[in-house]
Image: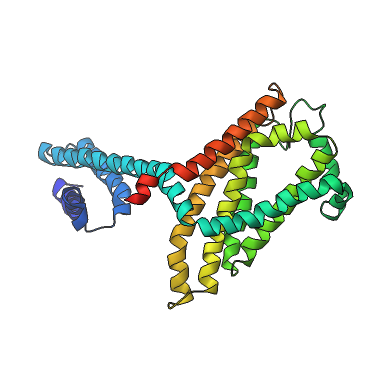
Length: 319
């Protein structure tokens, strides 16, 4: 292809890319098209250089590629900065802003959980109404004090268990969140059901004398995982409220409005689920550390997490 044909074929795209670089607000294309357009500029530069087109054309394309590179990675740094700001300030501020829903979800989840732990200390046989015999036998095996590593070992390595825990945590979180679309009933069900199962397991294993093995395993990741479930439930309840009581707008418009804070809550909960899976895979199963050490680490985790939600992002909320 001759140079003039090459320029005619790509002149419009080069000009649009140059317009974007000079003033993104007046860009003739959406911002999310920038990366593929940048790659095509780089491809045009490589072709122009390989075909030995004029130095002026090669220099122009080289300048466009350099400016595009700076713009692309500047935007990525901004996105990373926004994500960090959300994690450090926006997320805890949002949780405080939605405190009523977070409180309701926490009561639905932690109420059955703590209640069953207490009930099963006095009536241990009640666990058979909640868990199947094979489940009970499996938990006995998982938390046997003779084990070299604690907890579920569905895979042979900690890294594979990390993947398993991520899948399990995200599954629970998504069910609890998406259940809100059923007028909030699904979120209520999954919150209460998970509270019942976790409370039944914790209460039964405590009553039968597996206190040290069970609590030393769950202490480290419990704060992140359990609070994330409650926050996912709060996000689901936010969607459910839009379905039940849309106000003076249509249910569709109410759902669209509710989705923004709900999805942001789920972003934060997903990060917490990821962190919980990491701790559960690489710290919780270890038996090299004593029971007291594991419990102290777990208590510190709860204190830090509660402090994070109570104190972080207050300046952000004030703005």
